Length: 573
Image 1 (cartoon, rainbow, N blue to C red):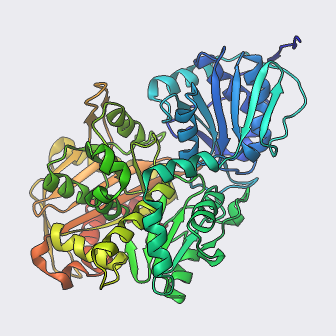
Image 2: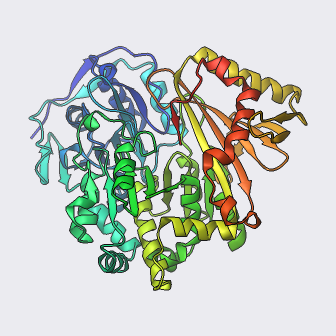
Image 3: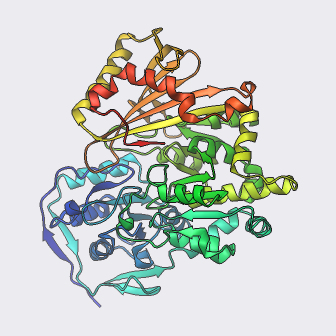
């Protein structure tokens, strides 16, 4: 049967430049006539679409089902052989990466704006992943962008919409369409990685003294958490909350941190729950939080790396190397040094648009030099896929806790105890991030210019600043702009963030970011290391108290409040 390919005339839209996190704009921007079609056609023009197999899915946010049908029309007209689509257009980002790799697809189109709010007045995004399951590298995203600047037409085939709610095979024009269970392949993957029986035995034997609560924040991971925690591990329904995926994420901000995951924090504290966890809109971020015990992402990845030997996946394949993004604390470096492992510090992104560091992790993984990695923005992962993976990190913690308790039958080991043991061996990197969201771009650029000027003129070198509230002195050793040369492909990434290093090893990092669809975001990262010799009381101290003096000095050096017109950050993590 022949199908008529129609060519629709169009004109370019400004600003369709994707980073490795894709193209993110407000829903209303994508809803403009031809806007989404232009970008989808640009993707197909930038790859070898003829005969390709592609995976389609996303975080289920508003405007996703309509966009899948658009991809069907355009993909079919461009000769795509097969589209593998998550049921109801849903696949978490890590699950999509797994499906691309498992079915040896040529790539995938993910409909996600990650942790950003959803709904008709909020964000939407389209992201292209390549055949290794990871985000498209710059040479691909640049090619897509160049095509969007000159596009004159897009191609479509008109056929009846595919029912995305029915698992099975269908056809759209000449293209084979396979609707798959969004959850099954991913659960199978995790069962091959972790010791589910060990975890299940521990949870059942300690049902009264070790309770779990997972908060899906109405994002994509709700169905995955239910399948794993309730259906597979046999936990009660009360172990999960906000696990119905909604197009607007229930009106919330699906970002797993202490500010936006307050629905988890409040219940954990009120009900004395020993292990709480949350994930974000598309499932690639995570937060670990127990009663009175918040785990920073920097500490989380370090502890997973330290305990990797109890996880079957790493027992079998070993740990090849460790890595972190530049602003992430150096806690994982200390683990690598103690274990004699290679370790890397990679960029977390460019200033505008965001170009996430996961592509750098992916290069190292594909070269066999990296097994476990993380970034302070609540992203943790390993070489099992090529995206960060929220549920994976949560299961890693449960596997570690189950193994630690098997080694210590007379003392219940929970989050607090694991943190205490870790600090006693490695010391503690007190760490916090201040986000100033949707600030004036002009003010943000002035702040960056001030720091760049200090780098050029060395005007801050050896200057000492005193904290007024703590009376601590901090002497600047250097101010630099972080750059990275990829050891695999030789690419150089410059201007990755201004780093102020003090002579006691403390540091503050300033980054201008652009993950949202409006305004600029300035991030301030603050890190102060205290060695194990300081003793348990000091190491267990409050983070805000431990960093108070350094934060005051960081704000003074940068004139941040003056430039941004903000007395307080939007989010503190």
